[in-house]
Image (tube, rainbow, N blue to C red; front, side, top):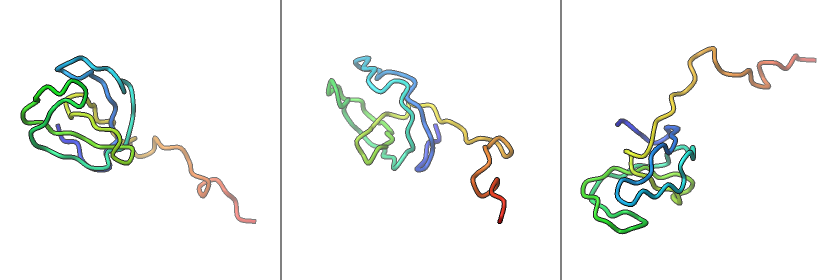
Length: 89
C-alpha cells in the first residue's frame, strides 16, 4: 500500500494479532511512516516486517494493513472558500 506523509487515512481493520479495535473508524493525517521489524503495541506479539503510520503528533500508530487511504476530492468537488465568496467593498 502506498501511504505517505500528508495522506489522509482511516483505520478500517483491528490488529491482526490480538484483534484490538481501539481507534477503528478514526481518521487522521499521516505525519510520518516507518518500516521495520516490530511488536504489537498492545499484546507485544512479534509482527516481523511491518510498515506503520504515525499521526496526532506521534501519539497514534497503526500498521498500514489496518488503514485505508482516503483519496482527496476531485477538482470541482471542493466547497468554496471565504476568498471565493467574498465580494470586495
